[in-house]
Structure formats: C-alpha cells, structure tokens
Length: 311
Image (cartoon, rainbow, N blue to C red; front, side):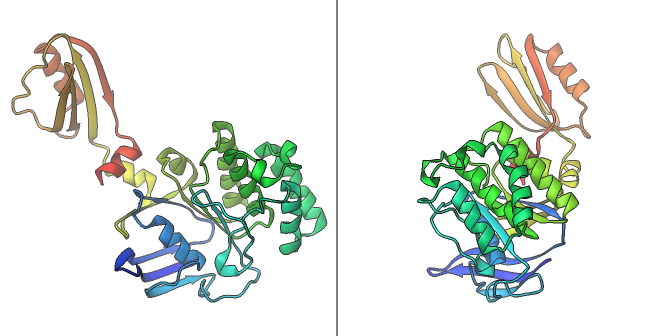
C-alpha cells in the first residue's frame, strides 16, 4: 500500500522536517503517528498524499508516485483539523475533500456524490448510515460556515467516508468533537479497517484515542522514526517502570540509597519512579511507611503517554 525509502523533506531555509524516513504500511493497517508539535508528522502525511514533493528518497502509494499520479480509482481521503479552507481538490495527490463554506451541508454532500460518481442507491445508503451516527441530520440545511467546529469536523469525516477511499488519513480529526462523537468515529474507523480493509493513518495528541483505534504506533521525533511497532510491545518494553506517590504528615523520610530512578518532593508529598524488576512495590512502600507517618499512598503503572514522553 505505502512504501517509503529514505525520504527527506527540507524546506527553503534549511529546515529538515522529515529526515531519512523509511517505512512500509500494508493494506488494512491502522497506524497512529505520534510526536510533539513540529516533530514532522504532518509533513510526512503530506508527502504520502502528494501535497509535498520529497527533497530526496522514494515514496510510492498504490505503487504509484503520489505527487504525479492522475485521479483514478485509488483515492486518498484526507481529513485535517489543522487548517480548514474552502475548495475541493480532486487531484489524486491532493486527496482532501474540504467543504464549501457558502453551501449547505446537504449540497456539499451532493456535490461529493457527483464528483466521485457515487451511485444513487449507494449514496442514499451510506448517507442514511452516517448522518444518524454522527448526529448531523439536523445540520443538513445549515451552511457550512454556520456549523460549530465540532460539527464541521464531523461533516468532514462524513464527506470523506461517502466515497470510501482505500486509504484514509486523519490529521487531528478530533478537534472540537465531543466524547460521544469521538466514540462514534472511533467505531467507524475500526469497522472500515476490519470489514473493508481500509488503511487508516491517524495523528492526534490524544494518545489514548490512538491506542484504542490503531494497532501500530510510529513515534516521530525531529523528523525521524524513533519507534515503530505495536502499542503492546511499547508497553511491555517499559512495564517495569512504576510511579509511587505518598503524602506524609511531615517531611518524607530520607531515601538513602534506594534503587529509584528519580523523585520529587512537594507539599510533603513524595513522588518517585522506580523499576519494579529491581525493587518491589511492597518492599519500597514498606520501607517508606515504616520511616514516616503516611496519609495517603498511590501506585501507578505508566500510561502509553508517559512512556512516549520518556522516549
């Protein structure tokens, strides 16, 4: 589906946003791109879509160069919460479907039906399934500029799902969307990946959402891939790191030479990180409780977000 070899993107001024990246994404995979702002996630997505031409390297999507391929059957669906602008762009490499502000949502969807030559019955069936799920039935007669940010993002998702692209890319699609709508979109993405073998690439700063939707995580930092694998393997490789918080009546006891990674003390609350394969939670808590008057204690396993920050 997607093959990238030694791809680099350097912008005028010498800023390298993607630095010698190689990866392969197979048909039907659900992949989450993770990274801080400016890490290179969006630039890499734009290279895959053909919105950017790589400075160096090799990119193929559907065995074709995404930058130069003409419109055809293999379409890319792109939903972005980063920048919302007017205009449809039907070019294969620019596979985004953006809504026209001055048209109603209903007319926008009819226009998409015509552009992508969706059969009448298929259009009716898909619309009947999508609108109730996304809660957009009452907004069909609203002009797009009258929609709230959350409603507009749901409308963008509905618009892309109408023509059922084999590759669906979502860049921060949950901006402004409520919890119920997130649950719905999450279910839709899991369903199309499972039943239609749609390849889904998702970026969001909500790591919990990524873990619930995607089977594979790609962590990007300074334009390079620093981790590529399953969320399970990511967690298992750091499973030994725990965090313990204990609130004392007075000052916490001296930690002496306890085998801990790091600790902080704030308002008589001791927070420490430790490797449970080296020192057990029971032994550590036993020592601290026997050397101070504790008011409360909390032991936590690391979340995926904690692990990513550590990496």
